[in-house]
Image (tube, rainbow, N blue to C red; front, side, top):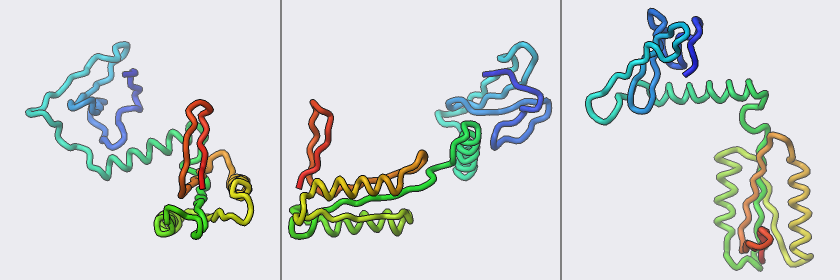
Length: 176
């Protein structure tokens, strides 16, 4: 543990303690640290608990707030946006007349989750036999990526159909 500075006497979620002592958790033990010059480990003591489990001194709400603070601090320090700037979903399905899996209700359930529950912009494309399905797929995926591409964007592609993985070439193939 690095030596503590005079103005670094608390941790997130803790209260300042008289004499500059700070308390934190390691494993299932509470550790108190009283900073002293030139000896970063001086003043460390471990408090043992009766039984196997440490008492719950931090609530779920406090833990969630500390996690949010940590994420914000890391993004600020690394000059990254917090979370994704944009999220978009592409759902690929086969036309009903050639859909051997009869996946229409599954696709609708997935669409509802992304569009209604998460409020993500969702596009559904339907592949058919009017033109080569591979060309339809290529065009739609390229357009989707071109419209939604960005450094901090999340693009989700959901495919309802058959596929295979070629271990030699490490390629994934979609099948009608």
